[in-house]
Image (cartoon, rainbow, N blue to C red; front, top):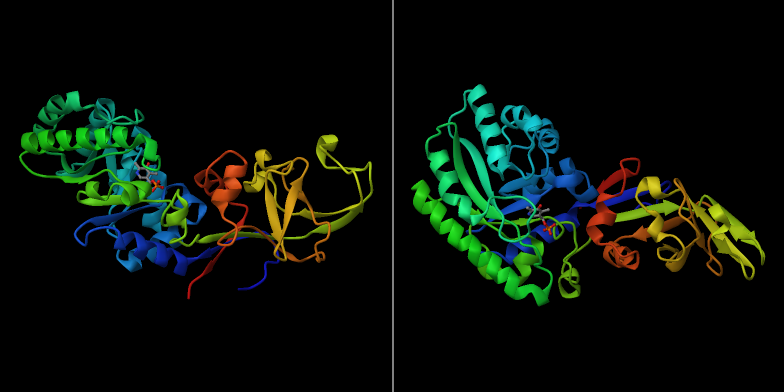
Length: 369
Ligand SMILES: *Cc1c(COP(=O)(O)O)cnc(C)c1O
């Protein structure tokens, strides 16, 4: 692997392939695989990730918003793309770019029917989202009759799938609640099928669901974080390979004596002689202020170096005392050896937030063997 000469997010597409095959091995051959590539594929570059997954034979993609799907279509992605959280302002884009909306409320249904009519669509594929307990988006079970009655009168759209989202698949203490959600979804699916007169696809599992509730695979599963190498539990993390490594370099070394301080607001006070390294990476790059004052750490030539004082917009200062290093040396922030999940948890957050927060200023480079 080439040594970094600036701050880069190195993305290993062969690790993505490994994770895809691992998750595939956990589902039945007949179950379809939807890759969740919203939020720039969790910070990893949605186009390169989707191209690789399409080459590997993935069945479906999901993004959050229409614009994210448009980017994939512009790059030549041909697979079906589910838009998880469409908003009426994106409906023209959805139809023009053959994206498939999640319909989660009566308001959204009416607005989408209007857009489909305007574009003279017939049997346009839609996905009905049901709320089984997350209380975020979706129709309630009690709304099924009314909803399907309305849909059967309209020729503009066709229901290709119904789905729901589980609230706590990674939390073993919430098993009973999760099984209740799955059961409610089964009841909804039965009623929808009967009233529609045909069977759309059913899906409810995210990455941790695939691991912990294999009996609820139905026709498709939706994996995001697992593809990027994180499984929300140690035994699954051990099977997956983080695809992204955040690297930077040492811009400058300083030797500080007792009573000096480091950074804004003098947040770190030096008690005895220290060597500090300034790195070109700050909160504008996605390393937020909660990582400051020792909560976050980096690795310089294999040695741990805690962040000293407050995170600045474009820089952090770390403790390089006793580490054999020089200006220009490579620094590892997170990656396969030092996981984003561990780093995130020290700042009371989760891998998802750290990964999706790496800003567009950080250059992405790709490895594929
Ligand atoms: C983001 C998202 C997923 C993916 O969840 P992971 O935990 O990353 O696998 C699946 N389904 C829906 C509805 C989502 O919003």
